[in-house]
Length: 285
View 1 (tube, helix red, strand yellow):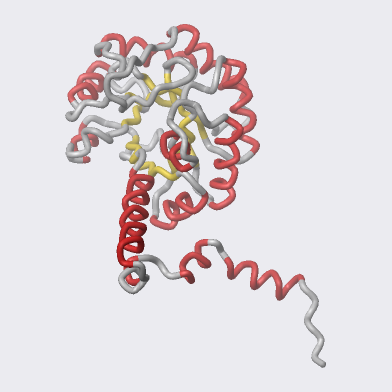
View 2 (view 1 turned 180 degrees about the horizontal axis):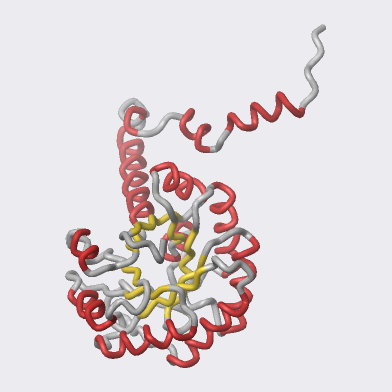
């Protein structure tokens, strides 16, 4: 997908259930969002969830799906040694790739207002990428370098300098991040980048930009980064409020999925079939 001649799309999930829904919808890959996974645990997106807790979620997600999962691995959960151990464990549970950002541990979410966003040393981060690539056993495992230069207030020159260093270190793609309401920073970068390697974007804030514009700029992939989480929060808030205020389910049932749909998503029929195959038949009295 990163090398595809056409624009590709990666959809956010934060649990096995949401990952399965993403696959059933038709998406070709899943973004395991750090914001969404931490929020689903009731935690802030500041590395409050340990990397092993994140790994547990990812294992369930991988078990429930067949399409590639790209995990938001924050800063790699430490230095090069933590990052390369992460790669080994991700491969063991069937994750297709990891995206790491060039900021400091513990990370600060890029969309938070009025927060300092200090960048990592460019050489140290490049070597972290090299360590991850040297560690991987699966030749198809992808390491995506997320450049936070724009987020930290730097200009296009610094963004390009960092992207080139990370690509040279072995990164399979560059994720260029911006939190502006328009995509001018992304446009400026793409012109200067001159298609040196695959570029992924996350248009959470500049969502009104037509997708055709990104195609013209030869963006490789778009991550829809947190929208299943936000949609589920709104649905749960509305349902909880309605039940609390009306003290009845009369006006709720038609607006939620059936229990049978839950069973279907759990693949209950497979268990029914397996029981017929592997449990002894009950004798008739």
